[in-house]
Amino acid sequence: MGLKNNSERYGWLSIALHWIMALAVFGLFGLGYWMVDLDYYSEWYRRAPSLHKSIGITLIALWIFRVFWRVIQQSPKSLDTHKPWERKVSKLTHLLLYVLMLTIMISGYLISTADGRGIEVFNLFTLPSLGELVTNQEDVAGEIHEVLAYIILGVAILHALAALKHHFIDKDQTLIRILRR
Image 1: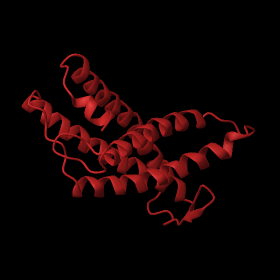
Image 2: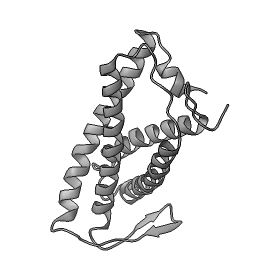
Image 3: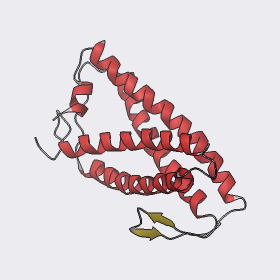
Image 4: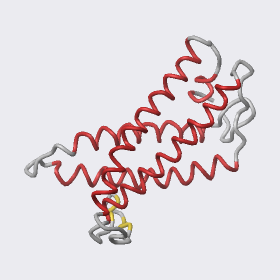
């Protein structure tokens, strides 16, 4: 199993980054959805947001590394069975997922640091705050964060359904290439 991608398959690092980040996105959505309804007396009232923020900051680091890795690595060529429109939609979907992730992570940072406090990351270090950059930053960023979280969930589900369509209907190697090396 090779580290790097080749013209036919993804390398194990690209595969690992893909699945770790996919799990993180779905996990953060679930955690965020659950934690907003916690009451003040729940033992998770402070722990859940702290965990959500720490995982989110870790995801930012992974996102940066993944973009770097994607730039320096070749991508497997499209399969001959892929139609031109499928190739275009695939590229646009991947770009949309990257932009959504970045925007959600920036809005999460802006929510968490609007009061001037940094973000404590797994009690290992504190990511400093830039303070309130715009009026009502926490509320504006919160709205953006919530709306985009639902959008990225929808796009990710469509992405997964497209992969399943390629596997079960088209019977091509699209899904296999990101599942195993």
